[in-house]
Length: 102
Image (cartoon, rainbow, N blue to C red; front, side):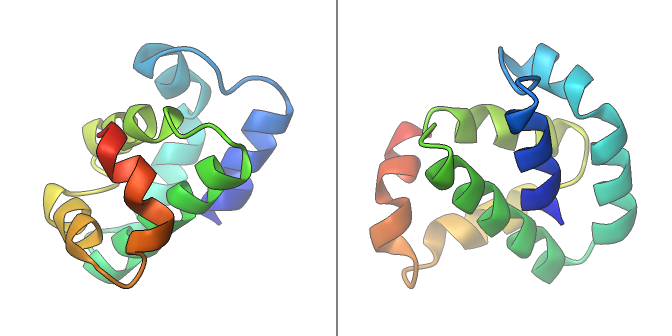
């Protein structure tokens, strides 16, 4: 769901700029995701992996940091979920370049 929403925004050329512009662009989607994810760490992790897959597919590794900031500020992703993702070694090969950019 997260990846689909981001892909639609990206393909319509609306997902550009810094955190403020992206926050404005994703405002409705973020509220929907927040209700779906609630406080479930497993859903937050799935959301983070969807963000990772999206930026990997869009070839925009620098966008991940901005998306993390926006999703965290809107209480979609907690710091605990982010830390679990960062510490996960299973996906390390794919996310190495993204962790380095954060």
